[in-house]
Length: 462
Image 1 (cartoon, rainbow, N blue to C red):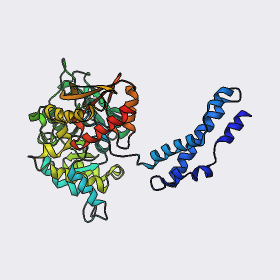
Image 2 (cartoon, helix red, strand yellow; image 1 turned 60 degrees about the vertical axis):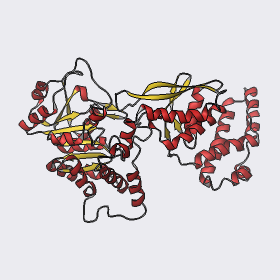
Image 3 (cartoon, rainbow, N blue to C red; image 1 turned 30 degrees about the horizontal axis):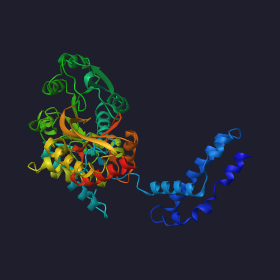
Image 4 (cartoon, rainbow, N blue to C red; image 1 turned 180 degrees about the horizontal axis):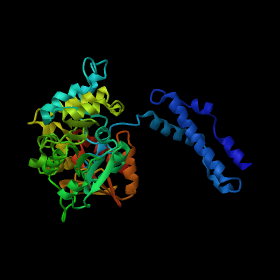
């Protein structure tokens, strides 16, 4: 009986919709989403009441079903549902190519190109293939005979292997059977129809391992760049040039997956182990693939460059139709490639490279700006300090010196502040470490600093 009494206390949807606060939100939250918020809150309270049961009268009595409380919760949900789910965020983690935060920020030229192309119709495939918009640029930048693009680098690997090695064997060193985020190379190879032949050991693979593995069923040798880890110490790999010569000897394809896809030589900037696409082509690799949204600094895409005879086969593969990109991706990629023609300014125009090469002095200056804004305002709410540290870049196992803002809250748990920062209209993503919050401004824009200060004040003082 008490359960039914409690259920009757829940206000009707009609009465809720008549509340002035909800009526005033019609421009912020569409009616269908507001109804969803109402149903979710009502269902939440119904479930609590029904799960309490008739026997637990004390628990049932403690359930607050006041009209104001229910309206307040509906308002909060309506505001949440009314906002775009996918929205701009501030990256204060220091991870330049964070997968969860959309990898590289798109450069300004690419942003403009996408904006221009979505305003109406375009010449996407009029008297030309889609890839023709980017093929000349990729040839100039890398020296490749031909190219194509698909929707990401995993798709590129799948398309390459399905075209060249379906029903055949592909040889890969055990030390290169990578896993990155939700990408596992052995799984992709299996789905492609190729048969994986792993050779060598985790830390050492010799030339004879490759040579001994080749037989009449071999379709290709694949070399995979280890972008997010290194095997150091007692280790050995075979030089690319030797592997290419071996593939020529047996007339099989040599495939190189360079992952992050830099179009410039980063070794002169202190990042020596990132493969450059033009170097792979210069070494005569048959096929090279890489991502468009990592070191290239553009949009998500899988870029494939190499010998025309292989690229033509891939374009004839029905899988290519499944994996091809849309007009926005092509526009962003073309603008990004044009940007790389200006080698003098690319380290500033390409945000991924700019953030990677950002100096500790520049970061320290940004930190000082934030500290000046928040120190006095948060003096009673948190102990705030600045410390030397290293940016945690998951895609690059190199140490990048940085300055860290460390916030040790006094009254509010760090976990709560961490979640509050991420729940804002403009979320701020930081690093949570035990009982404190860390902000690494390597990956923040200068225009973000005021919003970061505002976010810390909001989330640490409530």
